[in-house]
Every structure is written in structure tokens, then in C-alpha cells.
Image 1 (cartoon, rainbow, N blue to C red):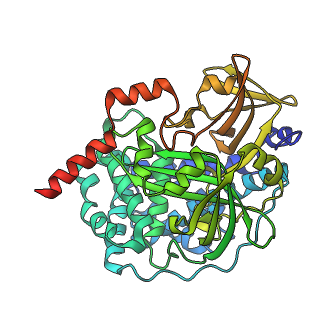
Image 2: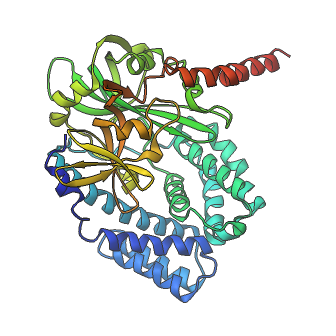
Length: 468
């Protein structure tokens, strides 16, 4: 529900944002070449990063780390300090963008409580093994990564994958290692994903330090009516996550809250398109709320401080029909959002649900844009999932959208979760989760029938192997 605020949002960047991102780019370039031996230009970039956090509690440690890197005597604790400085700078950029967005939307946030106690359940030797591999990557640099170094962390990753308390770190490291193996030798690549790999390395380095809160720390128990707004599907070659954005009406009354429900599953490259929904058969209630546009009654589910609802099927029941657009029109403006957890503060993490309607959409430059009150905002067509009915053509015919406002590549984008459009003079509503219980599009169903059900085939083969 943007209205005239769209002009304020896209009118300019927060002060200092461009300079902060430039400092991060300098650090990422140095990381790509390795900290084992840095030249004068890259040493200056690291020193500039240290200068940006000089007035913070990190100041002394990061200044020492920058000096040691320049002198060629970097150690693990120095690399961790530099990772913390980079994370802090991107966290400040995140806060500036989110503040601009909240002001444009009139959105309020619940105050964050004291930090949760650290999780000491993960054996220290496992974290040491992970840090050792991460430090080796940083000292060598991405351009020096080959098959041997990419695989050097396999033993540590396998061990940490077996620890439930280290699941965030384990999955992150497993994904980074897979990308490095697929890209090795990295020196042959024309273009490196510097920001992405540096983000992964930074987050992993900090998570590998002992004392980070576990994934369930600081949770409260909530009950009430959950009204989905839409589903955001994140798909990787080896994993897929469905993140449902919703409004929670607390039982007994009170202010509505913006929440996210995330469920994930492992996969292989052959499972794509509508077939990915078959990986989530353990969540029939959640899938029904998406495909049938239902509310859900929840009873005693954990809600994390950042707004993430830890989904537990046994504590949810499907309820009455609901319209995500009606939910957005009536409840979205007054719903309170959660504060972003410290380690998640990053510009890429900004993804705020909004309702935009009354605009004119058109194809432009290979994409689709919307125009409202003289301001133009591009749709994030690159984020349209292959497991749902939304297409660029449907976006170009739309006049209303429930979506996520994101900041990427120097500007704001609208990632659609659901749209209302006019197709062949008939009103049409389409949602990312419409195919959660099976595709409703004849063409997609025909294509799926030709290829067969890859999830069912793999399960049958796995069952055969287990029976032997």
C-alpha cells in the first residue's frame, strides 16, 4: 500500500550508502586476491574499512587486523575481526534502507529484546575445523581456489552437518563448498561473484565463532489466526526453501504482526519447476493454505524475535477461505514487523511485504515496470519461481500486486508474490503458491506428465536401495 510514498522511496539513496558499499567492494576485491600477500592498493582498501568502524567497539581490533594484513602476518583472529567490520558496515547500510522504507510505508517495528545467550552445544573442535578452512580460503583468495582447496573443508562440513545446533553454519558451508567445487579452478572464470562469496564467507566466519545464539533462542509462544499474503520460493541446485509471508492475528486480540514461515528441503538439479512442491509433503496444512487460499489456526507455535514463525504442522489447522489481497488492504498497514536479527542485517535481507494497486505496468528493456503517481518501479522478474503461475506477461497485464520490496543493484525492486490482472477482458488473480497441491495450468501439467514425477522416481529408487 504505497500510494504517494513511492516517490519518496525511489527518490534517492540514504546518505552515506554509496560510500559504505564502495568500502565493502574494496574489501571484497582484496579477499578475491587473498590476504596472504596484499598490494598497496588493497592494503589501503582494508585500512579504509577499518577507518569506517574506528569509532565503534570494533575499532581497535579491526585497526590491528588491517595493520597485520598489510604487514603480511595475518592470523585467524584478525580475519574474524575484518569479517565483523564488513558485517557491521553492511548492517548499517541495511538499517538505513529499512528506515527509509519504514518511513515511506508508515511501518512500525517491535523493539528487540536483549541478545539471547550463546549456544554452547556445538563441540569446539568442529568449529575450529570450519574456521581453519575459511581462513585458508581468505589467505589464498578466490582466484587461487582449485579442486583441492574447495574440497579441503569436506571433513569439517560433514562433521558439523551432524550437529543440529550448527545447522545454519553447516548448510551455509556446504553450499559455499559446492559452488567453489563447481567453479574450480576459479582462476579460469571470467567473472567472479565477489559480493556473494564474500557474503557467504563473512557469515560463515562469524557463525563459526563460539557463542552465537541457536536458531530457536529468544522465541516466544504465539497462538491465533495466520493469514498468508504470499510465498517466496528460494531455489538452489541442492536445496529449496518456501518462505510464506503472512499476518498473524493474535488470539485474544492485540496488534497484528507480520511474520514469516520458512520450510526447506534438500533436492537435486533434476527436481525443478512444479515438481519442487513434492518435496514438502510433510507440510499438508501449510501447502493447503497456499493452494486453496485458506487461513490457518495456530496454537502455541514458537515465534523468533525477527518475525520468523517456527512452523510445526501438529500445531496448525486449516481454517476458512481468505483473500490475500483483502488481508493486505485491511491488515497490512497496521501490522507490526519484527526487528532484524544482528547477523541478518544486510541490504539483501530487506524484503518487506506491501500492496501496490492502481498502477500501470508495461514491458521495458527486457523486464517489466510499474508506474504509479509519476514514479517508476521495476518488477523483480528474475525472482519469479518456476513452480508457480506468475510470468512477465501476466505482470505486464496486472494492476495490483502483493509483493516484497527489495533493494538490489543500487535500486528498489518489487518482487511479486501475487497479482491481479486482466487477461482476455477477464479478471485474473494468480499467486506463487497456487500450484502447491499440484499445477492448475494445462501446459505445465502436460510438461510434467511427459517428464514424470522426479520426486516420486527418486523416492522409489531410494526405497529399492534401502531394501537391498
